[in-house]
Image 1 (cartoon, rainbow, N blue to C red):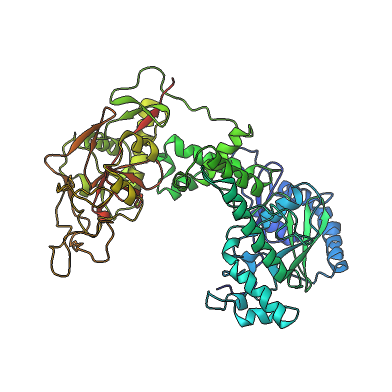
Image 2 (cartoon, rainbow, N blue to C red; image 1 turned 90 degrees about the vertical axis):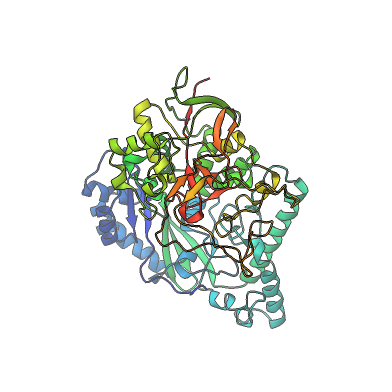
Amino acid sequence: MSDGLNKVEPRLGFLLLRDSHAVPLRGISPDEIKAGAKARVPHPDAEPIRHRQTLDAIVHCLGFNGDFGSFTNEGWPQFNQFLRKFGCTRRVGVFPADHGGCIDLNFVRAPGPRQLADRVFEARPPVPVRVFLGYGVNWQAWDGGTGRNVSAAAIATLTGDPASASERARNLYGRRFDLIGQFGFLDDKLVEGPLGRVIDKTYWPPGSSAEERKAHHAQCVAAVRAFRAVFDTQREGWVDILPYNERLVVLRTHDGGWDVIWRGYREKAPPESTQIGSSNHLAVCDLPSLLMTESDLKRVLYFRQSNWDELEAHEAEQAFYDRGGSMLSRQLTSEVDVRVAYLREQGKLPAPTRKRWPGEHPVGFRKVKACGRTVAVSGLIEVGSFRRMLAETSYAERRADHREPWERANEGGAPEAPVGASWADAQAYCAWMEQQLEVALRLPTREELRALRPFFSPHYEAIGMYDFPWEHFPPRPLIELDGRTDGREVPSAVAWSEPRFLAPSADLPEYPPPSGIGGASRKAPIKDFPPRAAWKAKLPWADHAGLRFIDAWDAYEWCQELGWISGRFWEGQIGPTSWGAYKNVKVGFRIVLDIEE
């Protein structure tokens, strides 16, 4: 539930200087500017600047004339005169992130300060005179109902006669789900005046009909009109936009509160080069070049100036689907990759120049066609090769998660046996192999692996992406989509040192339902977790596209997408620092290099 309270400390925003250094600011007083200058975040590829230079640069980028001394003696006093002239009496937090917003009306995460700043400074004029940010609205009353009907307390906060207020509130509450993800400043939803352009921020996969889109847009417009019918008559929630100069705007609330936004506003600190590694449980030295490139791209996107971020993100999202992307593939594609693909299509971002393997592929790889591309794919990486990586690097000491020790999956394994490893282990191996071959390497994507090795049957494709269905039960005999079974057991490849399942009983059926998902559990408690997981003496190998795969319900391979595993009978996500012990599986990997054609 939203608390309706302002944060005690003013919101932290970041100002991009013209040389792309970023400065954290909680306000624009001389003391706050000094504090921001001391905490500046330097751009990795820009010339460093001294403290005094930073002070002057901040003042300049906020639109004031002169240097920091001039600002202290003249600019800041003049700004305070401006505040007094327009009745601004105290600093407050005006955005939903500051005052809590409303959960039931989906007015929580948006609109944000960058969205408004970009609308004011980067969009075409005219600049909005007044916008709705929700400050001062009694959101607790709106969130205080049962979740099925609007509360009487919310109706009581509205102006107008009780019957009209009740009708408007109930109409809005009935349409609240059509407001999910719709708020922002791409259009006029939250801009005072007649409701003009309304952009439906819903994204449509291929095959969506024009009629379906039109109907959904009409629902969105109706929901926005219901929202505005409630709040257009209220003083609370609306904020006046008072331009101070070409780079600074004051936001004034109905009760004299004020806040500021500026051109080049950022809500978070710039991403560091190590953040992509940290988020993927890897040290920088264990990152393959592809992940390092993602890190660089995050910084490139962050430091770009004079772009309308919300509009660009909206267009990039729809462009992803327009070029044939599915809802599933979108779940596996980062926001960075979506944006970068769009910017490259628009010619706003150059394509990377990554070294590829010229001529014949190296030993251990096979050239295959997958997803319209020619790639060289290795066999499953073996224990001996992985042990050599561990011996030549100090990766074992940096390994992020020791809850599933690597040795438990590979103890006693022959050098030629497929290695069991985590997703992070596989990426660290790619980074090591890149140094050996001097070429960029990666794991296969989910789509590539599935193109090389299809699901066993439509039944298993249908249960893919659900939570792993055999964590609590062994799989039923092989099943087709209609529920029929041919009596053959689903092949297994892993020999556990402790039993993974309890024996069937009157309270525990032998198998889960045909869907693969059941409420009971035959999962056995493990005394020494994780148990050791050796491969069985005879593995169920199968050839696909000239490559060997283990065709078993408990053997999987890592995909390039974070934490995603693919197998003959299931695909989905598990913990990226696990080799599968907690899911009753063992996961290996193979590597890919892109070759020149």
